[in-house]
Length: 117
Image 1 (cartoon, helix red, strand yellow):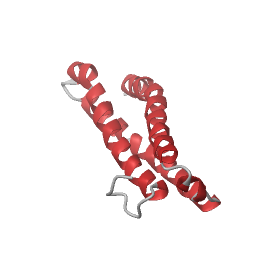
Image 2: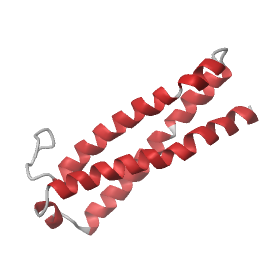
Image 3: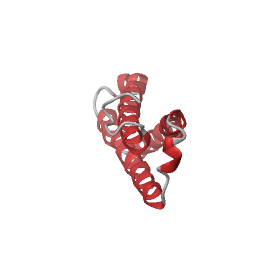
Image 4: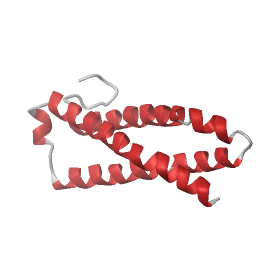
């Protein structure tokens, strides 16, 4: 079990940087594309909400550990290790879509995040 946990940490933690960088890029893109209106929406409360969302996004990232450890404990360990990048890709796309949704709600010129700014 120690080897599996060490392998999971060794795989997922360096990729957390990519995950967070992608989410920051989405928020910055939405913020910059909605200037100057987005600048007027900045507040301490908004920073608190963004911080909370960043923490929750990283908690959600930890769900990959559950899948990874279970898959490595199965008979498909070697196959899983070759294809676990797919879990990263799917999770990253999902997180980017959610982040864009929340960023549009916070910064977009329109009142609805379902509408393109």
